[in-house]
Image (cartoon, rainbow, N blue to C red):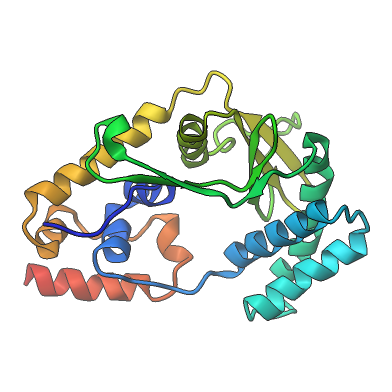
Length: 253
């Protein structure tokens, strides 16, 4: 089966978490609108970038920018909790990112040949905030899980998918990467020093390529995987489960 495809950390992590969800998105062109949490992150990142690029430190100004992005750019409801949180998190992003100096690039995309990793398809990476010394990927979240002792729960942070993504970015851009998690009330930072998860994401990409090589049609790919919709990705994507059930029912009848 020949399709136009580029590997990315996002696509590959989706495949690792839920192959059926990867199938409907990459092979059957399913698209859903970003949910409130996704929009919260986008609005917070935009407001933080605008503030850092223009040396804006006023919290109200940063908050206003986040609100405008949340409601105007993404057409979301001002009354949603995520709208208020976007402004708070934007300020936390700014507060923690200032120490890295001037932002060199924001959402910089780089595409390289997959040959470097023994792959047929190209690999694309898109960073958040790049500075002279490192790349920081920002993650907006409703809350950060901590243990009773106050320490971040190591079972939750840093998230394996995020680590795989940053190990790939570190290798592609040749620069240290870090993760900055911010909630309305908390902050957690994780670096990628001594992280060796690159092989995991590259191997998953090889699995994807093998499936695409041995399957003659999209329906053949569907037949490989049972439709299980209990992964978190389905919950945040309205209409995805119904879309998938229709495909699996048709293919397996």
